[in-house]
Image (cartoon, rainbow, N blue to C red; front, side, top):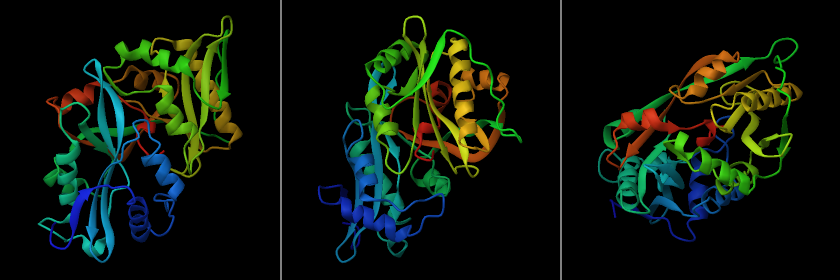
Length: 338
């Protein structure tokens, strides 16, 4: 209990209060923050791959839930093993109760309590928490050990009067849209593990939850296969949204061995065509700056667009921040912004 406000773990029956508090604080859709539906909340926090509700809540005796520090617990491949991390999303504190509890206030107390309950190096605990808290950056840096891991520099091709120039796809490859990913994607991720020292586990369970089953967003899932034998070479995910600029197409996720140049060209050609069909103003994507794909896509005609967004983390493992910066493979789909 912190001066009239109790901070505790999420309990069954709290979902309605957590969602109601969110919609009180963010009551209108402004193109960046959307009013949440219960279907969206259930998808995000009940149906995620680990089906854990790692959420800290603040409860007022009269007002009910007035703050929440939610994370999506996700499997992450690192140090040669599958561990757990926490993606911080939908964090909210009612302004009327922001100063409740010990200084510097409820936001920090929720975060510290969350870390104590869910963070750590023991099996099943979050090795680290990550997110994009640009408005809360200074407060989080000072009190919650937020560290800047990486700036978000997007790669993009802008549409001209005739749309985005579409490259020719190599012969012998077929790129097709699918409704869901299957077991072959699990095998693809297993083959790619040696190339990915650290990455959210991109198996079919994660990818289908994140994209095929998503609520309030539409994604197109693509597979690239060899025409000769039908073998899976790679997959990618595409969407159109108003992030960064209105009606922008995004190559939002990507799983393909970096050395497979032909499949790279084939999948990029497919999404360029789709972007033109959608009338998109630009096609954008994102890779870590140290990943070879970041340079490869520039050689394919993509320009670099720096943004004010950056990935932050609170780490609970013994790894230094520079290790995460150098080894973490992530795409725009690792966030909930695209």
